[in-house]
Length: 436
Ligand code: HSE
Image 1 (tube, rainbow, N blue to C red):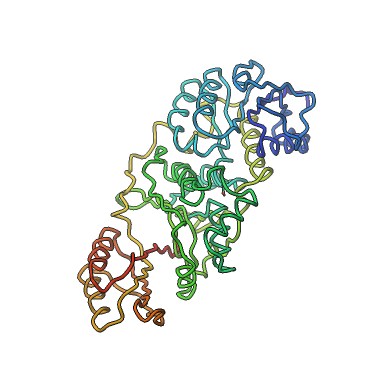
Image 2: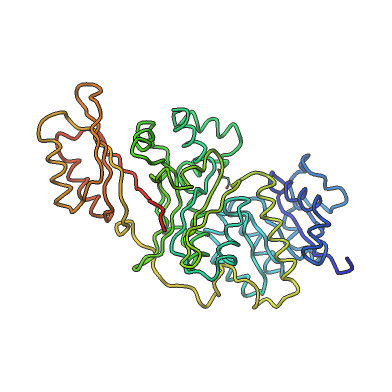
């Protein structure tokens, strides 16, 4: 290959950094054939070496900002994580005219609008496929493969740790805490596992997916976020009995009045493919007006699955380096001056069916009071089950409702909770039927 190599600077040599070095080196010849020029790792910025990759012959700096300042580097690959130093590094590299590849979902979700504005000013690209669902090329699928569609909704299992925990609770009857301990021991969880179990990690990823699907600016602070830490084995089992599995979903929907953006535990019918995505695996369903429902499945984390996405971005940029900047795929799939101004909806305006669990006193008229309140608020019940009395006092009542506006359900549940006969906190979990 006679053409000049594309020079890459990699910052951060942890799990994904080492995976990226290994994939780029192992598949160098094939990658060069795909790009039309060799990809050369010319500079690594890392506080320490990583025994899991061979970096012999590559220039290494302990000061990571030296990579951003290196005039040789065409593409800076940011793999350090976090949002403070990473933001500074990326902005500096952009101001030095470098294209950026990053796997950092928090950085893009929280500072992407600022980063893209700077990149636009400098005429460089920012690619971040690896920031969402690891090896699954969901952003390229939305921004390119499905670009002819009006995207109606997306729904994804986009946190492997949470999915692993829910699968263990369902299949082995394990407690939440016990399953989380194991997920941490297996190395799936984020450094701070509350990011996984409280839905923050998934909210970062949903923010990015939604921008590319619906053409809205990144709006992390507008994502409704609810974790899985309060789920009990009782609810997981009850959902199964109603024919549903509980999954922790990131959901984005384009409705007439605005965009729904929400991360929460969700009952999905067992017959839907997404309900069978188990363990640490990720999957994203996309419903486009032309293509219909599609599903993208694969490893959402890990050294080489994530490196697969990082390297694909490097390849894409390598190809684009010969094309005019204005003509390349835009940062969020839509052109900067053609973004949608549709608002993100308040959760009050979200409409979906609900699973509800109440513990009530076992006496005449209790059920009548509850159904009266539901009916006064125009809430219709799809199915109901009263479980055997466990302690002679509290009787669990399990219900599935028809679709209801969240504000109406909240009003009804507040009235029900105020009844003397209703014991304990009422559990409610949203349902998504995931049909086209
Ligand atoms: N902690 C994340 C997960 C890793 O469990 O999916 C990938 O972002």
